[in-house]
Amino acid sequence: MTKSVIHLAAQDAFNFLQEHSQAVLVDVRSEMEFLFVGHPKEALSIPWRDEPDWEINPDFLARVRRATSLDRPTLLICRSGHRSLEAGLFLQANGFSAVYNVAHGFEGDLSDQHCRSSLNGWRFDGLPWEQC
Image (cartoon, rainbow, N blue to C red):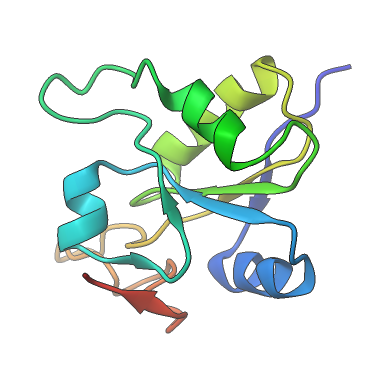
């Protein structure tokens, strides 16, 4: 039976990380998003898709394997939760058993005014983040 990726709201993901010191938070956005938009504190940057061609990063699996292990809780975050879900399904297909997706991601869903960080997501919830 195939397990599905577990979705956690941003606050629940933060709480999970506080309660499970062995858990790893991987930011799968592009390197430019990670640097210039900001990222959760202590998140590792391992892009799932990156510039210039936005193809799946051929080093993604190897880099995640170096950062964590198959049974260690691995939380994935992107801008809105879509790329991280795709990356999580890929990790599960490659043997990872404890994969979590941060629903709504770092910036959250678009508002009616087409703005992010105004409805939901890591930044909206006021969770620790940095831009450097």
